[in-house]
Length: 353
Image 1 (cartoon, rainbow, N blue to C red):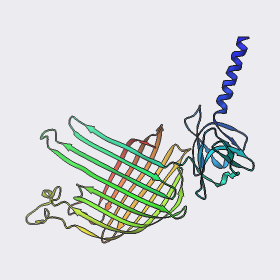
Image 2 (cartoon, rainbow, N blue to C red; image 1 turned 120 degrees about the vertical axis):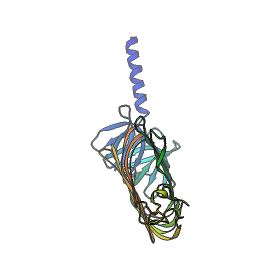
Image 3 (cartoon, one colour; image 1 turned 135 degrees about the vertical axis):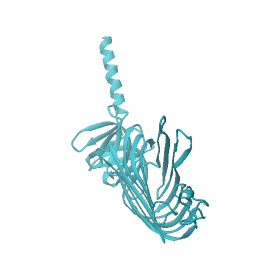
Image 4 (cartoon, rainbow, N blue to C red; image 1 turned 180 degrees about the vertical axis):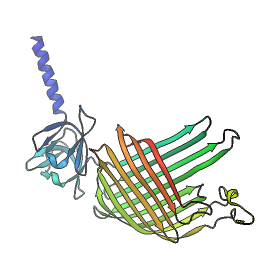
């Protein structure tokens, strides 16, 4: 008798647990229970007992039920909050405050669920060697994206450092020291068209650039916008100022009183109006196991400056990610004795949210 009562209690507990879970019913009749994380683009993400994250195609869903309030953003930018319930004809309802159901909402009109207002990442990498070779190099970068109803703010930056030490003379030679900071504020007039204001600041001791600053406004077009795929293009006028160090980093290397007497002279600063363009792209592939990305920004006036970042990220576990990227900076009019192209290969570990 006691055994039967125990089994009944266990069954009731299981039923209660199943009742307190979000549930998705697919068009083929399959049911998936868990917790809805978010919907962006063409997929819904859920967390289940048997998987950290399950990705479901949105157009494969027939009904959606939730046991906790969720925020639903429609394609007309209207935001509703409530408990999701199933309805007929491939639609859903929202119960606000547990009091009443909304009118049926076609699933095709749902743009986002539990929209992410904050996103970003921080990554670090480097290397050390000792013995016959004394070398160290470090890299760090971070970015944050803040989203509103019609606005998006992006802030970020990176720092690179490297040097070598002669094991005999103990003389240390700098071979990399640069940083970049950037920020963009965008206002969306339509889901695709937006206006922006941006700023860019760069420093590179090896290029003898003390501070390159660029400010501008312009227009952009968002071809795709979701967690799975983003692609945008921007263009507009900028004001660019490039200030060089008073003394070249290694002017003695090029100084010759006869053939090159001006190698250690102060480099003339430049400033003026420029045209700017930028492309930003990222996309998850292979069932969201890899994220490809590419971004580049160009400034053209009497000189041309381009910075680009291309690579891929691999989510490892709970936001921890591995990144492999190639960075290329091009400046058509470098300081005397400097190359016009710098290239960096980066392998970093970081955290994304």
